Length: 146
Image (tube, rainbow, N blue to C red; front, side, top):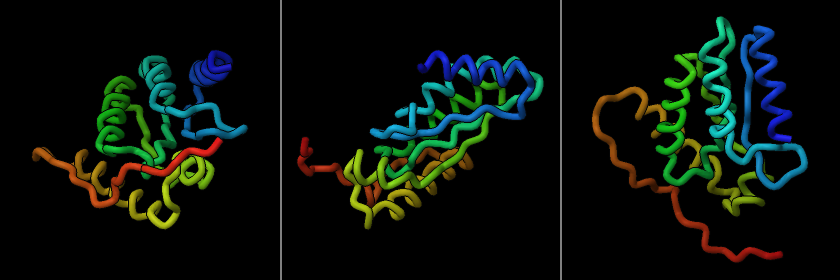
């Protein structure tokens, strides 16, 4: 199924679509990708050699990444691999992904998202060395029911 999906996206590049996109979903019937950056890495070289197609990762559900700076690093790599034809998107994430599958407290979701978003955009805009000791990044210590 993954190969079929990638074949369709590569065909869209061959046809000259403006962009091809991948996203992140977990533990559900409507999402194929727990890691859109992996799929984006596969597509980035095809996009690089295209005259007009960009790569969109819409996106990494920021509230679930610890540390979120990893998203900044991987997206920077995708930008380089795609030849500068990369568009980054940052969704908050669905309750299915963030709250149910990853066990993130719904009351913390927005705060975690904004903290991650601000850190990622800061890493892309500055040359200074950054450290990260986030307020919102607490490990999930709950039990998993089956």
